[in-house]
Length: 374
Image (cartoon, rainbow, N blue to C red; front, side, top):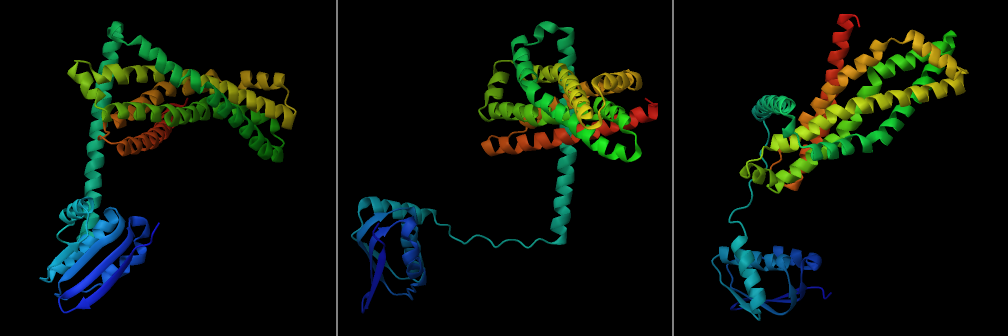
């Protein structure tokens, strides 16, 4: 690459500027200061570009900016040796240079801060109303599907059940197994101080069956399947496929949302059950290794001291978690605004909101069952 250079010659008629080399973006640093520091002072300028070997938008901007500054002083600019392609590029850049510099950054005041808080509050309220309306619409379509099962798209349902449930079994089972191992190891470390190692069975079984099994499963499903729902439906909205569905008389809620929500309602309890069994297996194995609690003793204490309600409470939560994950993921997808960046932003928001809602809902269930004495 030939580095650009600029030479100036002052005479009675004005200034003669000769530019040579490749005036392209990669090499502009060597002449940028020379262009910007040139002071026309009302003197006519002859700009010779005969020896310019290459010119791109960056170089054209330097030339156009120089010509603009010269003309602003009332002087004339004459170009010499400019080939038509370079002349057209310089003219195009000149027409698109803004007339005025951009406004300086506005200094934020306390009033601006209050206004921002107000806008976010109103936006949050509007989003809450929107998602409640979407929940109502989804429940309406769901009940209508229950009353008229022929409206359910069975092929889509089976496909979503495979994606949501079957393909998630390995990660859910591994998560449950490791949670059981961690609970047994940490519980044994603490219970050994009081000579109560045998109670590690109750620690594992109650915490897993009642809370951790289904909660962590729902979090994994929210991150794995919820994000997939938002990304797939959001991409369809960007490509205007959802508008095409409405044009054909198809209901996007019935076609896209219901199969996904029903798949979650069916598969999340199953995944929660698998996570529970894997956690009990991991906890029992770790108890056997670290505390010499035999599998037979572990099973006996599990049967005698862990009521069925602990398992039932976890399973009762599962459909509610599934509905929250499905509705939030699909609602976020419907808020996508015509760009790939919007899809990414909504997918991230979907995962965060789903996990937050699942944890908040689990807290409400814990309070409710505690009040009920269950």
